[in-house]
Every structure is written in structure tokens, then in C-alpha cells.
Length: 210
Image (cartoon, rainbow, N blue to C red; front, side):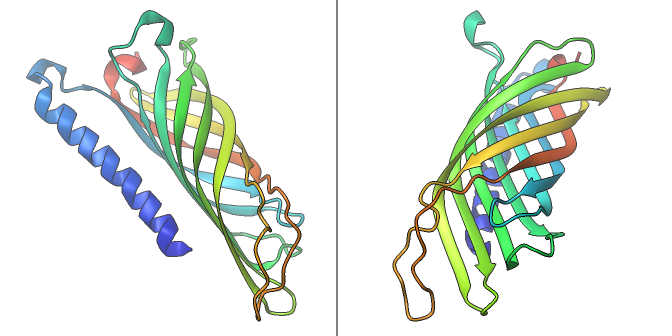
């Protein structure tokens, strides 16, 4: 599971670096500061919906807001997100529980009000979860997942913004898999992890930060 999660994270970083390179080469020298990309990271606290309790981890965001859009589409962008929840588990959660996600989707940022800017988003991607039962049996599930959420950004200084983010996930048919000699069959059910992330985002497009 870890390798798949890291591959998703590496893919997101590759897209970001590629886009950065393209804009840096094609933009005139007077516009090199107006790259419409933001990158950030945060600390996440989630209810994994795998039993009761909480689990902690980290999140990476890469946002792209096209500069040339019709007026009725201004504020829309694309977000890539990767999250690894693997620390600070509640005692009543399954041992070795870990949830990793790599997603991409739409984000919409409302016009800035003073130093505040709210946003909403919807994503689709890939999720992995590992857990260990009290009997020592290990479970691994991978699914196409969906999520929706939103939050706000608060400008700290120039292009650096504080981000408070909430997200609600949908993992369909999570427990639906056949029995094996070491893993018993479990009834199908939807998993709905949800939680908050607090972090910082750097906007390379200086014009969006003014």
C-alpha cells in the first residue's frame, strides 16, 4: 500500500514540477511571478471511520488556477492532493491502521474578503487502507474514492496563506472482497473518513495574493 501511495504523491509532484517548468519557460520575463500555482502542506486529524477514534497524518496540496478563463468561470481551478494517515491512533482503533489517498479534482475559490478567502472542492482518486485484527489477521483494501469539502485561507504575509481544510470521504463497497485462507470475508459497507487539516500554502501567482 505504501508504494502505491508514494507513487501517487510522486505523480502529483511530477505534474507540479512539469507545470512550473512550462510556465517558467514560456512566460515573458515581466510575468514570471504570475505562475498560477499554489503548493502547501498541512497536519491532519481524522476520524477514519474504521472503528471509533482518531488518527493523525500529513497532507500535500497542489492547486492550479488558470489565468485565462471566462468571467463566469473565474475562481475555478484544479487541485491535486495526497494524504498519509498513519500516526497518533486512538487505542480503540485496529492495530497498524493506515489510510493513504491520492486524489485530483475541482476547487473553487470565492473572491478574497480582506485577508480571508473561502473555497470548496470535489475530488476523485485512489485510497488504500491497512489494518490488523485482534487475532493478528491483516486486511488490505484499495478503492476508487470520492471526497468533498472546503475551508478558507487567511493571508499571513505576502504569498503565504494559512489554510484550514475540512474533507468528507466516500469509499464505496469497502469491505467487499472474497475470503482467502488468511482473510475471512466481510460484509460490504461504505467507509466515510472525515477530518480537518491545518497548514500553509504558498501562492506563486503574486497577483492573487494582493
